[in-house]
Image (cartoon, rainbow over all chains, first blue to last red; front, side):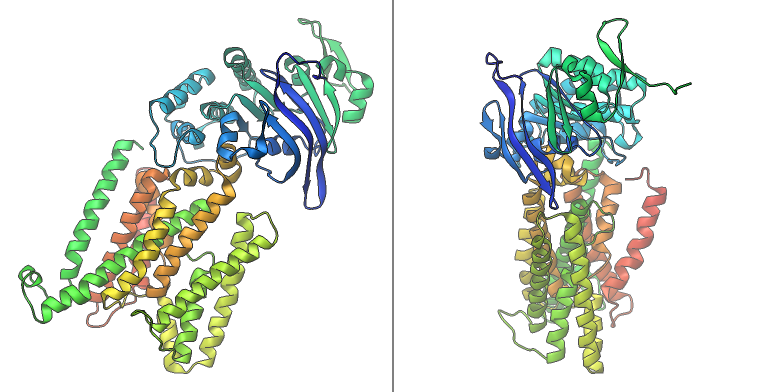
Length: 269
Length: 329
């Protein structure tokens, strides 16, 4: 799909990525590219391997096969520290609570930029401040993270990935558990990052509309296999939706943008 | 928790350490006046320099080491109940000691007693066993490590009971007494025996202060921040085992200080390891030195095993801090 895109070399190039865990094949020969500054949404049913895919890219799962290149450089030749300077990862919301303050947590995230014996310097504090401003969390810098709401925590985690210095952001269901207000805020933050710092975003989502409205590129996984890689409008071909999600959807044009979106089904009368 | 307050508490703990190390050798059944210490000779001079000073030093080193190892394990396993003995190091050492006591092993090497040597061998054996077992099914996870540790712990404890069953009354008594942990150190040799293990282990732990913060927040989070999780875990595991093995071989498994000192320090200086490590080392050392001073004076000339005192003094103190401290950790 991006093969003809030779002007901007891909920031991320994945070839034949396969992962097995406990004898089960989780990912089979997944190959795709993401251009610099791109916005890729990964969709697919539960258990399709979406989360595993981003965990492989972050090398949280380290025992995969295939090649991953970041700006032409093989990931297998990079230390975890070097990788963390390129990629930031925001995991699925969980209810584990840290005893750190927001500011402490963000400073901890400067880890890949610090050597074991150095103390955090002006540059690190600046990076933390910038990340707080970009995500609008200055207000709870000194709050204990255990006292934050789910929406506030999600913003802190995105800020932490930014403070890390990464220009590629992996987001695993960034808005799934958020109320509409915080969902809007998080989406606005992602938009701001892309515009202001050219961040490349890869987002795992269950929300088809999220992919249709925001993404530039959509990748669909079913049982570990890549069944679709293309633009959002192409995803809507009935054969594609049926193949990916095993059901059909009602599509209507969005009253503002005019582009098709999925609407909820209503019970038949 | 302001950084100013954390720093003040660490300075206070440092002052306490100096005070404890200076004062504790004077306390005991035989009163010692400062003039005797320098210049004097005779019994009291000897008691001070050859018995009390090494004993106080040994208590401090053991306390500091066990506290730091407990802190590292609690971060590593993200489990507040982890202790320096969670991975079976103590039961391995105990088995070694029991076998040495039962068989009357009396070889000594470089001034190190046979019981100590056997305990050290047992500690090393248990570490290798736990580590080897948890590596069989790669990749290594802390859960596997924890379970392997628990299994080895039970296995060695059973063998220990078996050794006690086969022993006569005197031997059994000595084994049980050893298991209570104690600091019946009478010379500098025992201190010198612990120092290399504890010092090397503490350096390995202290160099990973940033990684400890991130690991305590979760392995996946640590990996996504750039920590080579498995390598760092191995280093911490190895460093902590060095400390615990070195201490246990000399003092037996002294309880409580390794689990509670880190928690008390978290309440005092917060969870960030750049402050938690120095606080824990200083607090653990001072705490055990004080406990040992109490243990050897309260019913003098007899001694209470220091493991009894640590929990008796430390338990209520911890509860007080937990309930009335200014904020929970």
